[in-house]
Amino acid sequence: MYRLAIDVGTTNIKLSLFEKYQLIDKIEIRIETQYKEFGKVFQNPAEILQHIKSGIKKFGEKGIEIEQISFSTAMHSIMPVIDTLYDEEMFIWLDTQASSFVKEFKKEELANRFYQKTGTPIHEMSPFSKMAFMKNKIWFKEVKKWIGLKEYLMSAFTGQEVIDYSTASATGLFNIHEKKWDEEILDFLEIEKEKLAELVDTDAYYVIKKELADELFISQDILVYIGACDGCLASYASYLGNGTMNTLTIGTSGAVRKLTKKIELDKEGKTFCYYLNKEYWVVGGASNNGGQVLEWASDVFCQNQSIYEELDQIFKLSPIGSNGVLFLPYIAGERAPLWNAKATGGFKKISIHNKREDLLRSLSEGILFNLRYISELINLDTREISVSGGFFDSPILATLAADIFGKNCIQSVFSEPSFGLICLIEPPKKSIILDQKRIFTSLENHLKYKNIYNMFVEELKTEL
Image 1 (tube, one colour):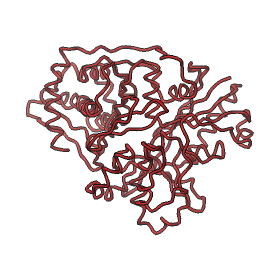
Image 2 (cartoon, one colour):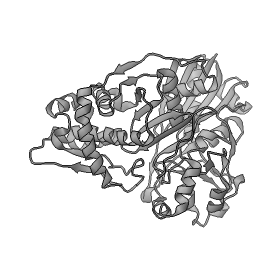
Image 3 (cartoon, helix red, strand yellow):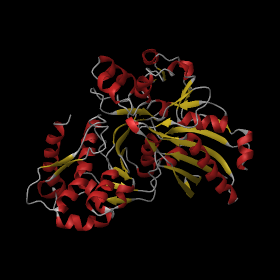
Image 4 (cartoon, helix red, strand yellow):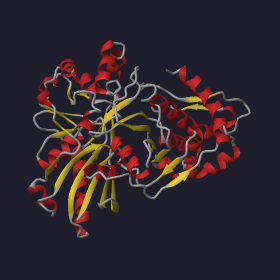
């Protein structure tokens, strides 16, 4: 019998099949995202559900018997339910319609008070901000329920409209100290607690709906586990698979996280603190500007070829520090450390002597300088850093991270939320140190980068 971990991220659905802790098979399905005017960004949850059903059927066609299903979902999704018609537009973290509200609200004392209660920074990404923005809509009072993707999927699979503490702690509505929906925040939003899903711990499970099991040709005895949010599970996976509390993930966006046994909050509200399980919390900061900066550069500087193909040559022709060029990577607005959806990026300290390769090398350095700055806000554990995401498919960028952070890095296939899900359901008795590759930092290179990083921080402070 096998266990199926379903991880629904921003761009892909990953259905991973495990036997005990061993990954046996995997299916990836891309998710379509709609970008509209005025910062409106959403996905269709009904399409996501259909993709998941199709993936499960593919495993069934192989004769695979599934015993358990568990869910990991991206954070910050929200959808107003009016007349039960809620299957077309679910707003995701990229939605920035709430920019005007956030700009004004952050000036108020309530902003930091709400952050200290929830551990969720005040930003356009959070359901709190989206709901506050929607409060002025004529249909606001007609909303019968507010749900995110986790509640939607649990309802579809089990008939129970529930949300786990981990995903809830990224909404900006959940009091992490009391583990309940915060009454003061709900009063501010003018919504009743009954309009939100029931809260449960991350180890909660339910039996699959009979009619869905019949539709998918799978057992009616399958247990469906609610799981947690993707970022927290990635940190948990890295800890159990690689033995480190620190994670650095760079895909389209980027994040630095630390697993901790206590709530840790930033006095200025610049970092997040989300619940994982009864023992652990995840502290960190997420950046909008990860691999998509290099994708942008591919279009602008590389004649639509991938910059990744040129990296070896770029790093040979431009030395550490890009011959003086610095790049502030905020071309897609920014979450941590700026928390400004309207932020912009750019090259600094360019001279007539700089070449194309200097500009291109400074992009990668800027992405990692920014994430190092975030890492200092959360005070990383002294151990190594587990790195994951498509950015690090390039060995030269993995080495660059080790040199800029001044820590050895670990690359492992067991840094995915799906592996964290399996361990969340059945925690191993001790850390499982699995197949991994170590990237060692160079002290000489790190000392060179230290001086350049300090210059980056001085430029960054002009944006803060």
